[in-house]
Image 1 (cartoon, rainbow, N blue to C red):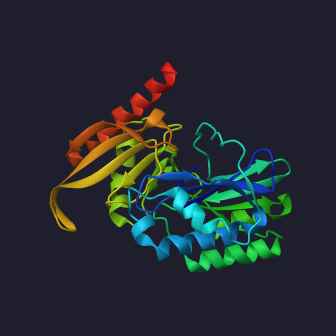
Image 2: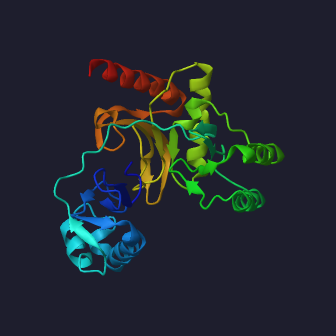
Amino acid sequence: MLTGNINWVAAPDDTNYWYLFIRFPKTNIVYEWKDLVSTNDLAGMSLLIEETILKDPGSFYDNEQANGDALYEKVKNGPFKTKLVTQPLSLPAFNLPYYEGLNRYQNKYWLGIYRRDELFSIKFLLEVCQLCIESGIEQICSTSWKSILIKDIEEKYRKDWNYLLDKHQINVRHAANELNFQVEDNSFRALQLKNHLVKYLNDDDTRTFGVCVGIKTRRKSEVFSSILVRRRPLIPLGKLGLFYVYDILCAKDYNPNERTDFVYSSSNPKFVLAEQLRRAVLSYYEHGRQI
C-alpha cells in the first residue's frame, strides 16, 4: 500500500478525509502524518510537501535520520482543511490485488491492462482516451504495477473495448506468476531478471498466489514486496561493480507494508537464484500455515 513517497489512505470513518504516510526518498523511514487532510486539498498538500523536501535535501532526501516531525512543522500551517488524527490508522492485512482483464462488477465492467515491457504506445493511449470520452468515462487510473485501469465501462461499450484490445494485440490474461512482480521504474536490467525468474517459476509450475515479489537492482531504490530480490556487486567500484550476486530478503510477516525483517538467502550467483526464490515462496506459505 505504501509504495510511494507521499501515500494517501482514505479514512475508514470519514470519506472526505485522508491519512497521510511519508516514505522519505531513498530511505525506509515511514512517517504517519499528525493530521487528516480533506480530499480537496490532497493535490495542494502533496505539492507543498514535495517542494519542502526538495528545498532541504540534506534533511529529508537520502537521509536515514530524516525527521518526520520537522517536516510536519514546516508544512502544517499551509492553507489546507485538516483535523488532528485521533487514533493511528490500522492498515489492513495485505492482499495482492488482481489488476488485469475485463471484469464485471455490479452492472458495469472494469478493464485492467498490463504490458510485459511496461510500455504503452502513444497511439494506443490516445485511442483509449478517445473511447473514454465517447463512453462517458472521466478518468484513467494507473497502478503501482505499471498497469492502467479503466472503470465504469457500460455493457453497451464492452464490444468497443474488446475491439480496441484486438486492434492493438493487447493480451489481458498473463500468468499470475508474472503479475506478482514489482520492479524499479525504467530498469531494463530489472525487467530482464524478472523474465528470467518468471520463466523458471512457470516451468516449475510454482504457485505464487498472494506473494508480491520485488526486484531491486539500484542502490537506494524503493520496491514494494513480500519477498525482495536484490542485485549487488561483490566488488563495488564507485558507481560500477564487478561480479554481481543476489540477496533474497523477506518483509516482516511477508507483509509488503512492513520493512525488511530478515535475509532469507545471500550472495547467490544468478544460476541458483530462481531455485532460491522458489524456496522463499514456499517459506511464505509455510509462514501463513503457522499463523
